Amino acid sequence: LIVLGIETSCDDTAAAVVRGNGEILSQVVSSQADLLVQYGGVAPKMAEEAHSQAIDPVVREALDKANITESDLSAVAVTIGPGLSLCLRVGVQKARKIASCFNLPIIGVHHMEAHAVVARLIERELQFPFLALLISGGHNLLIVAHNLGQYTQLGTTIDDAIGEAFDKTAKWLGLDMSRSGGPAVEELALEGDAESVKFSTPMKQHKDCNFSYAGLKTQVRLAIESRNIDGKIPISSVSSQDRSSRADIAASFQRVAVLHLEERCERAIEWALNIEPSIKHLVVSGGVASNKTVRDRLDQVVKKNNLQLVCPPPSLCTDNGVMVAWTGIENFRMGRYDPPPPVDDPEDFLYDLRPRWPLGEEYAEGRSEAR
Ligand code: ATP
Ligand code: FE
Image 1 (cartoon, rainbow, N blue to C red):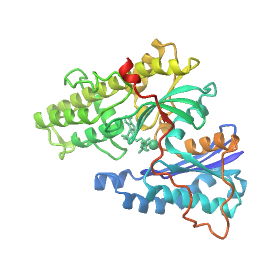
Image 2: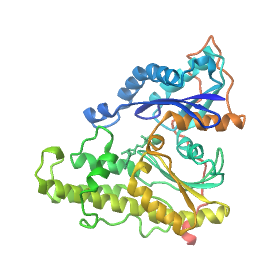
Image 3: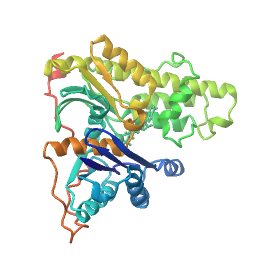
Image 4: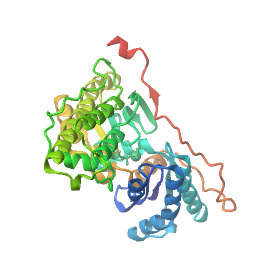
């Protein structure tokens, strides 16, 4: 079994070729970080344009690096949601074109399911059910994964995702955003004192598993303003005193942002074990799971509760084609795929795009009041 995975749901164009045994034959990502720096955010039309330009060379490179051609493939997997429909469409059209030309089955993949399920590629011991914390630019989810395609959502963000808070903090601190904000904040935080700025932990009084990062974002912005830090001046050209004050904010923000994750995971473990007592693992994935403080702190939480942490390597935490190919492989094995699209209509726009696509059922309401 050899599957090509294509991912264009947000701002990276990615493709990868993976074998049924989990061997990664190739992995290619073309990032739009430069555009993001230039324009200060994802503009759907521009992102679509960038995907359209990147998609053919990225897929070609993935096939070349894997040393195969389209006719060696068993199936094509592609992210069909959630995400920006203009962007998703670029990947889906490409996938359908290849599938129809080479008579291949096509597998529609849920982007967040892929973030979670890729953990099973790197940790072969990881069986369903497991608990997962998915933390990225647009999502903050705590889910029980009962099986492929079967999820219970224990918590989500009521406003922003943690990745968004990292990105804004980076921007306001005048950091180099060329790799996205998260890694820049993480790096600067190493120089700072995490106890120096007193940010309050979000949602202390809410005894549930939901998240909130909008308030913390505001606290960071106010701290920056009150210290007369000008984010328009890049950190590379400020005084050492200004730099250290920026580092203190980065470190303090990161500490509290992660503390919020820790507190929610503690409770989620309890809830999850009530639902599925056989759970042994917490999977942490999505871009923010590349963060070392996140990994270290959650490892402590998990150990304390006699569970095991599974966290994919950073290249499989941020958006990538491998997770799509692998989730495609798992779905394919369950018989979940579509037949090759008709050759005479490869541009068929009636395909199943799902820009908004919740992952599983929400946990029974009233639960939070009961605790
Ligand atoms: P979603 O998965 O919700 O659709 P996305 O696909 O854009 O969003 P990912 O690529 O999964 O998101 O993750 C990107 C996010 O991860 C960005 O917000 C980025 O700042 C953050 N991130 C990446 N590396 C780190 C890091 N080392 N520390 C903190 N945050 C990080
Ligand atoms: Fe993602």
